[in-house]
Image (tube, rainbow, N blue to C red; front, top):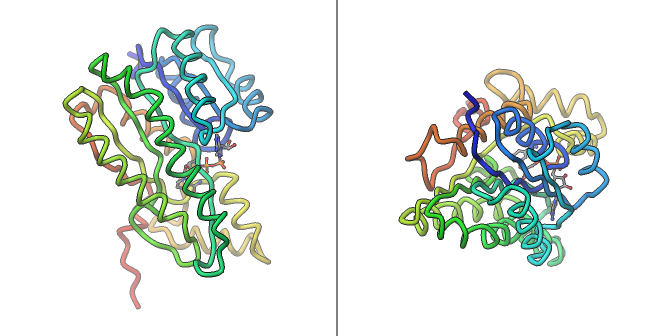
Length: 258
Ligand SMILES: NC(=O)c1ccc[n+]([C@@H]2O[C@H](COP(=O)([O-])OP(=O)(O)OC[C@H]3O[C@@H](n4cnc5c(N)ncnc54)[C@H](O)[C@@H]3O)[C@@H](O)[C@H]2O)c1
């Protein structure tokens, strides 16, 4: 039995990485999936690669900081599938700085994408979910939503706030049958982390150092994060709301001895 049969899922930042892995897992579980991303070329490649049946897959280029573009994409998904009953706010960017030397424009860029962008997408789907009395929103947060790595400012500020928004909306719309949850991955094998390791003089050593931090000696695959996302948007957890599921292999619980 497909676990997401009857679900019409709108995913942002779905052209690559975790978003693409979630899209693939949702299709495998029988959902209709609408992919959006601001990078049109990579999005086209992703759609070709997914090879879904006609009627099961749609896509549109949209930047989540552009409310009109997001509204139009949600309308396109509704026209194609007959509705949107799940939103996955996955699009996000790393903005890492020393706080005091950071230009204001970097703060604004981070908040616009990592926080306001997710809210823009919520605004596009919530009225219809409330009218239907059912729906589900999943925000891809991070362990940066409750822990801090020095010199990564202001990314964790935005992710803490995304978790706050998850809780606030989950409480606000529970009476209307809408669940809002967060998923907090730790390190995942994605381009974002490859770029991060490549910023060090010895990328291999930097990668090995990251892996060694983990109790299991490895980081997550995008597919492992996607499996958790499938669970959270499925009907297998109807009473999980305003919650955050951590998927970091235990890293954020580990106490490093002095
Ligand atoms: N990779 C990790 O280790 C990790 C860990 C924790 C949380 N996360 C979170 O998971 C999510 C996905 O991360 P990823 O590693 O797959 O990233 P990624 O950079 O590989 O992919 C992100 C996608 O989002 C798109 N995107 C970025 N800004 C956008 C915007 N304004 N509008 C529309 N699309 C936009 C990009 O074009 C890209 O296709 C992010 O929210 C990130 O913060 C990632």
